[in-house]
Image 1 (cartoon, rainbow, N blue to C red):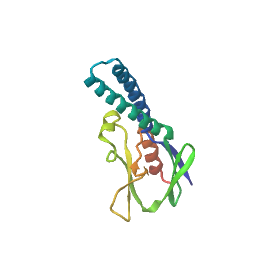
Image 2: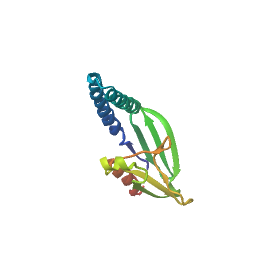
Image 3: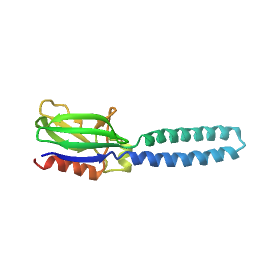
Image 4: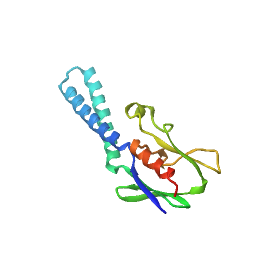
Length: 163
């Protein structure tokens, strides 16, 4: 019997908030720059406005791609993990079910600053029977994907229920 879930990464909202805050700060600092007359403070505020404008652009580029959605299907013999971005399948992974020793949520791949803002955010570690090395279960472009509490519960529930 096949069981399947679809979850979405949690980090997407962080980029939206970052773009909004840095955009507002860029406008405010540029307005201050426009109204100053001292050359020293003009150069400092111009630099600050540029930094926040560049940060706004970088955050917008992250938002433009959209969040990564993961569909995980567990069959009797294997675990299929498919990654989707904007409805297109961009990556697919297969694991043999009998080689999986343990799957557990962990904060080891999470930036310490993100943990301060969202303490429930975690990534998943997977350990196999044929190796001692722990790997990230959900990894895209070399970075572990982060999930909120509800997505963590869905993944753990998927592996707790025997088929």
